[in-house]
Amino acid sequence: MVALQVIINFSRPGKGITQYIEGLVDDNPVSLKTLTQISPDFSLKWCKENWWLNGYIPHGRLISSVVKYLFYKEWFSVMELLDPQGEHLGYYVDVDTSISKSDGEYYLTDLFLDLWVAPDGAYIELDREEFEDSFQSGLITPDQQKKANHVIEILKRRIVNGEFQNMLH
Image (cartoon, rainbow, N blue to C red; front, top):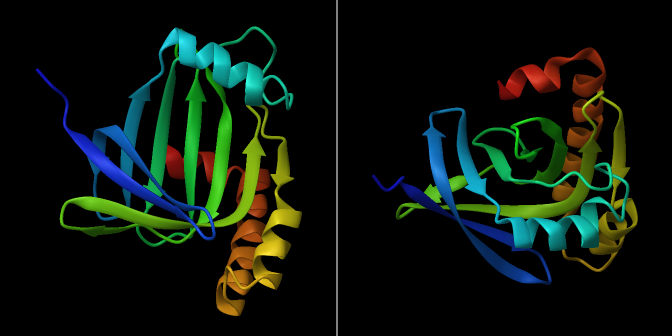
């Protein structure tokens, strides 16, 4: 049996649109949940170039699957990384517009701010400079800048008080 797939159009202002084709897990009024299996070769390359290099996951641990949570009313999306045994490696959180669906495809726009949330709940804010530059250069609007700053602060509070992880499971 072939699993249903969805197409996600992820727009990065100034950098175009990337299309992701992912396995559908659930699509309900709150969120879209997808699952993508990662090949060992791609995982090794991806880990070397990003996850190990930046110290987000321990050197030697590989990613075998990615679960994404994309929300219809929240201005962020979450990518959960899992190892071959299904162990949680962390969450990469993108501050972005809420998703919309049109003609069977999904759309959202990146607002540049990100968070890395480690398995122990510690978090690191990422890309603040890129976010500020995108506003200064007009790639995001004043309303988007204000919303993104508000969302990142709410996310930090939700992580600290345990609400964030509960939203996903």
